[in-house]
Length: 150
Image (cartoon, rainbow, N blue to C red; front, side, top):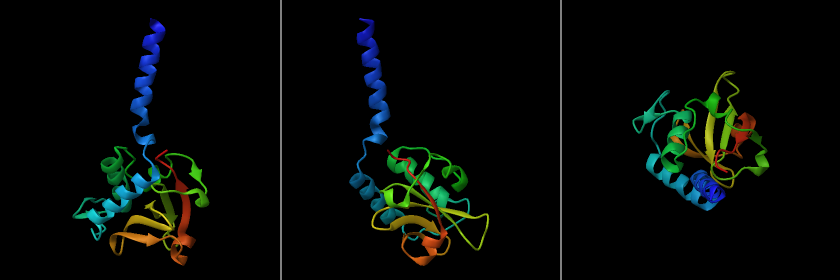
């Protein structure tokens, strides 16, 4: 009888953990494009956390909390330390992309990978937008990628 309860508890725990793990890439992609439609053009504001103004790490944290029920740290620095790095040729929808901006040695930027080299982020110049990782600027600034959705 004890084994039955132990198995039941383990199944319940696995089921609770499996909610984020079971999201397939097409679902992630659809949610991220939906997020873009809702937030496109919202201006950049350092420390902002609303549609009046938002910064890159706030946009990432808010997106994952609201779209995937996953709480991420608030800052780019802490977000970059969540899990181990993954190679750029292995990225998929929902992975976090981190950049070191060459003009500012201590400034980091984060975005969310979509597909085909595109990523969603809060740009300091144009607000929430989709950019192409394949441009020279983003290729030279790329630092690392991290997977937070398994």
